[in-house]
Image (cartoon, rainbow, N blue to C red; front, top):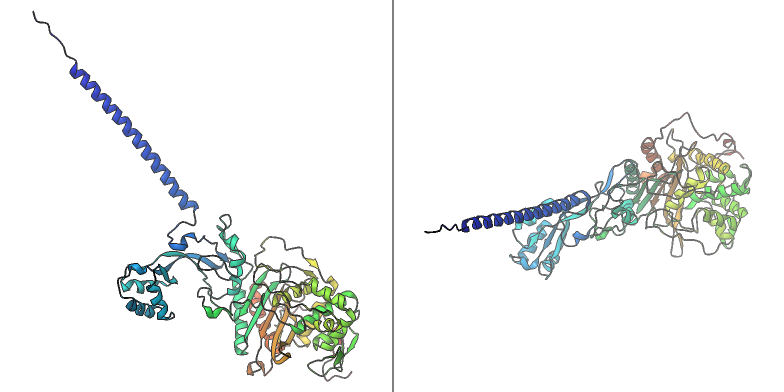
Length: 563
């Protein structure tokens, strides 16, 4: 009898196969989970870069290390400086296919401002080098059309100044690596590049509209008077905010060339000048403050030159005895010197120190000059500095001093940052409030009855002082070279703004009726700027209002009137 034997081979084989499939599925699941996790991590990383890393983008060479910079805008949000992705043109000599001489000839056609020899040297070099940074799109297209693979066109972060040369000395510029060099770009470089602050534009105190007015009127004067340069500034007397700052000659920060080196100097904060008779109201204000001048009617002998220490102090025209208003109206050096002599060395020096004429101007810019401070404060120095000779400061020094003279007597530093709702700096008192009120009357009288008549903008109540100072040279002062300055404020019944306009070496021609003095050259600039920019600043003409100078008018004797 045969026994039936059952073999479990098939059953075991099926069980093993199921186990293998289960293991494979588990492995596939693990791989899928790992893939999904990796995909998730990469996606989150890309999302992070897209949302938070503002420095990401297409970079090549050194530009990969250029930090993103915040925009710079004026007080109303008008863009003054921006960072964009620009083109550059680079050559890799080892990859060039065409003859170097041929390529140099083609490049000269595209870039006629560059010598052919310079292109030959770059094309023949051993390392990659730039043909042009900040290239225009049509230039990129023209080089690309040459058809040589040795040229490439990296995209780089580029600083663009959309208003061209407007406020160029205020803004400054950046270097090829994107670092701030001068102006606001240099002074606020850290803030503009810091990750914590660069997301918001830097708002300046500058008003682009007012800046344009000041630059255009100053340019017209410098051009028509055949002058070598000029400077101008408009300052808020209560906050120290700079609404406009102009320096001529100017330059375009988008196109820097070596020839612009001299034009890049900011004449407002970096150039020093003897600003002449614009110092007289400051000196007389100090004398009123100290009690040396107690009556506006007191008279001083200016009928003949004043001899002191072998030096003769003169006036530009025949003089007589002047009271205080007449001293300023007639701009008498002699009478001012006599008042300063009574005030004395110590108090005159204290005045200038309180106005910081012994320091670099107080503003955020790096381009600030140290004044030419007298080494010997003897009696003669006390008398001559009272009318602006023997001491050299910047126009910015003068603007801050005039702000203190008319705003109630408080000196504050100038600033290029928009104050907005922030409280202005506390400042410090340098003139009594009563003295400031008196000086507002006297400054207005100079414009209505004195050397500043050409600055009188109807209804705007301008007050100010002329200054026509001969420039120092080898062996003494040069009579044919004058720095013509008008320092003013408006409206004088409630001062809000100081404006200083300076023309460097104007020529006496038909435009100025043959005159070189400030009353004929700088004062008209102030009038035109005030009439155009005043309404932009919220100051409108009102001929029903003015400064009450009725008590001073009887003291003023016009030329030709009896004694």
